[in-house]
Image 1 (tube, rainbow over the protein chains, first blue to last red):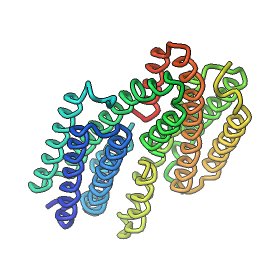
Image 2: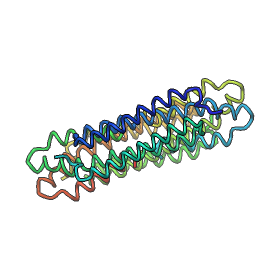
Image 3: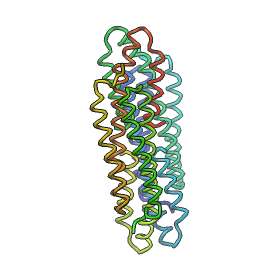
Image 4: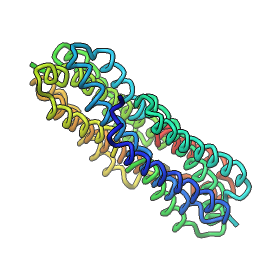
Length: 91
Length: 91
Length: 91
Length: 91
């Protein structure tokens, strides 16, 4: 059972909104809207995606990592988490 | 006429691929896939969106900003560009 | 006792190198060097600082967070960690 | 003559403050302060360095790039600027 299970609906809602933003971007390009306005919308979709990423990290630490450590293991989970944080933080 | 006009097809292709990635994410959540795998996919979609942002900035500088400066103006465009770079770079 | 204790020398070495980079930047500005070259050096110092941040997060998870969870607590540490990751990742 | 010339004093003041923050970090590590507090200070120094980077980009566009375009050239400057923005924005 996965950490994000309980928040599945929230994650799906966020992803659907982001899908709508991406389709909105396609319309803006199609209508030759001003590039700075499109860029603003790109930044907004990027921020929404990063919020999904943080939410996933959050669920992961609260459930998978915590459970593994409580069961006496968790070293592998801790390694995996740190690698994921490094990639997420962009280096 | 807008700076990204000539690259409209490339931009649309990128946006369609990103839309596909977002729908892929919805499937991964639906199938209870492992959070770290979903996070990897989120990072990949975020990188693709940021590449679209850079492409828009690129077109904007090469066309709108350059044209305005050549026509003897451009101060407003330069301000707008710098504000957009600051937001894009995340502060 | 703190998580970064064992790596104190490594952290101090990194911070001293970054201090040297910052002083190098002051010299570059003083000598009117080319802004793009200075910016390259700024990016390099920023990357070095972020590597220190990741190292601190790493030690923190491996020691403080893991210990707290093993002692049956850890919820507060998990909250604190997630807030720190969010700030570090830039939102 | 360089774009940041007029703001040299402001840049030097910022860099000196950042140098002070880095030395403060060395003291915090030396005194075994709590890793999350040190990380907060790392984030603050990183933000200050990025503000210096933005300031350099700003001066560069307002002076070097604008001047080159006005003199009928500027393509090379525009390329260089876009590469710098891409590195600064972290990809």
